[in-house]
Image (cartoon, rainbow, N blue to C red):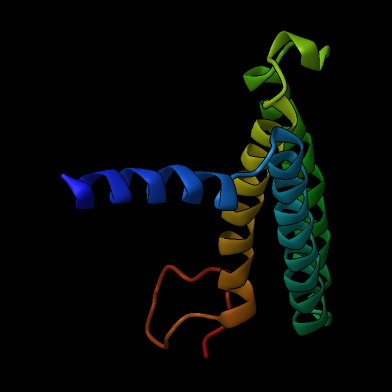
Length: 131
């Protein structure tokens, strides 16, 4: 019984030591998005540099990136159509940033295909260069 009470007290105290306010969670989610956005821009710039001599590809990649940003923004508004964040509560900034991060990480994964290339022999690699 004594160990049960001690375990309960420990869990109660530990919850205060590791808890974050909603504001803290909102800030952390925003920082995670900014980190992902920075990585996206680095990967995008790497692809532009690697393929600089392929003018047609660069033109098409820039167009695709511009359209992806429009799609991302439209998807964000589809998920959270209310422009008034009070409609979703205090967690809205966190949720918004988390979804933005998810979409951004998906785009990073796609762009890394061009940045990293494919193994030799992939007949469907298209404009992606081989390693």
